[in-house]
Amino acid sequence: MAGCEKKSGKCRTDRQGQRAGKPVGKRGMESLQKGYRKALLLLYPHRCPVCGSVLRDTLICPECAGKLRYVTQPFCYSCGKPVESTVHEYCMDCIRKKHEFCQGRAVFRYQGAVRGMLYRYKYGNRRDYTEFFALEAARLYGQWVRRLGIELAAPIPLSKKRRKKRGYNQADLFGRRFAQLVGLDYDAGLLVRVRNTAPQKQLSASERKNNLKNAFKMNRNVVNLKRILLIDDIYTTGSTIDAAALVLKQSGVEDVFYLCISIGQGG
Image (cartoon, rainbow, N blue to C red; front, side, top):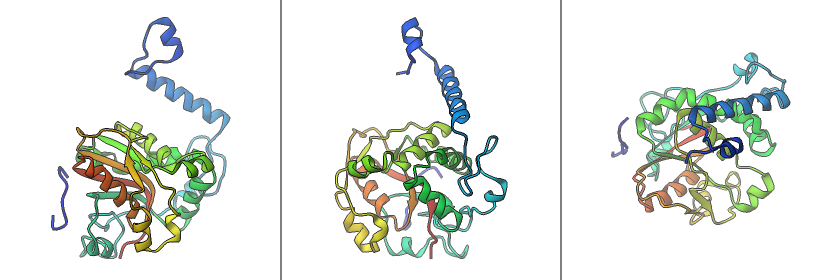
């Protein structure tokens, strides 16, 4: 997909390199990052994101992998929610309302084992799940983001209060690693959340939209960027993505896409 289809239509160096006066090149940096990840695995081995078993050579138990439900065809051409029939190009949500984003995709259906995975990733400090989520996203959607001509990826930000309480932003962890895997430029500070909004899961669809009004603002100049990919963990009604996409478009971005770890069922 080359364009947005509407429904109606400096080199970083390590300290040793700096002291020696020799900058670390791209390959050197990749090697350092790979070695760092291996060292972390020795100290903190991966655990299966479903059952919690300690793993050495894989990121998920073969038995548990079968419990995950991936998003497959048919799905909504706009938001990417699974739909019941190939007859429908769009889910009922996307038929009823116009989104600020162009198109979105997700890795898993938000059901069964995935619910527990996402809860622990978001609230249980299971940052080690990042590699599994990012690798699966890159496997499924690496070519998709390249075809779209995405120029930059950025996460949906947390408020300062929520970030301080949780200690991390799961969308940033996931988005940063995904961008590394597929070769995308990444900016974790592109957007900031200026209001500490109520958790979306507690609200109705209309309340979600009002809850996010004026919740985001730009923190960078993106006048020369035309296609941006927003990253989040869960897509439900699209209110969060729409609110962030609107701010980007008001700043001059032409097309906004999104990628999430999981998504709900479409009508």
